[in-house]
Image 1 (cartoon, rainbow, N blue to C red):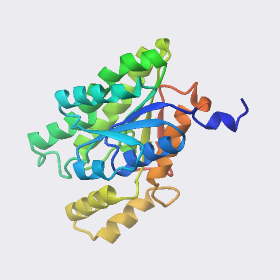
Image 2 (spheres, one colour):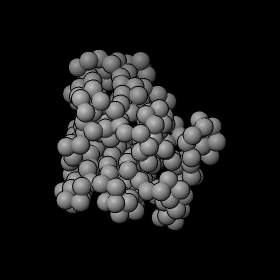
Image 3 (tube, rainbow, N blue to C red):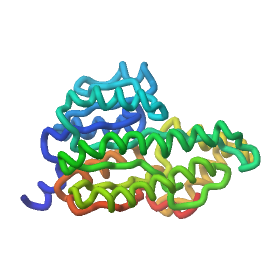
Image 4 (tube, rainbow, N blue to C red):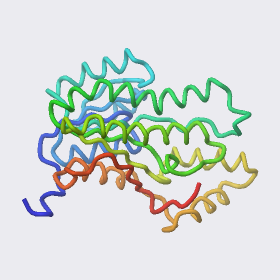
Length: 257
């Protein structure tokens, strides 16, 4: 196999993507389908699931609920096993000072962003051992940088990086690779809401907040959902065979938040 061939995942990979009906998750699901994979996704948005392209099967699932995650894996059995699991489900959480964040908002953010990844990894590990497969956990550049007024989100994403590195050590002897992708400011409705909330908290305009955010990126631009999908594909390709335990930023070099 030459170097160029090593950049393409093999045909027929069996892939599960959480929160795969929109945004980054949908971009990843579509990319794997285009690469010849069989893809199953979950999401909490029933309308988005109904609008999925042909060739992507799905389950409605809230990863904060153990019973729903169990049903997700029951449904995914139709793939006959799993080669790649993409732990993508997460929420932005509140934008507020630590003394303003209520217990319920903090707990919900941790339960979805961190405990949800545990629930999926818990059930995925035996299947990935069988296939000597790949687990990809979606973290964030907020998992390597401080993020004022977004403490539950940042705390959960730092924890995802720790989870990733620990699972890479634990599962590596069984041939399973585990990596985290750390997206930067990804273009789309979700970041627009984050910018709007931070602008309101700071008492500045949306345009001023967006300009300030971009000024902290050395390349002065947002990244696209397809950039994150491209990294996931590379990790699943033969060229990614010896990459494990890594926290890989796809962010145009975010220097601070």
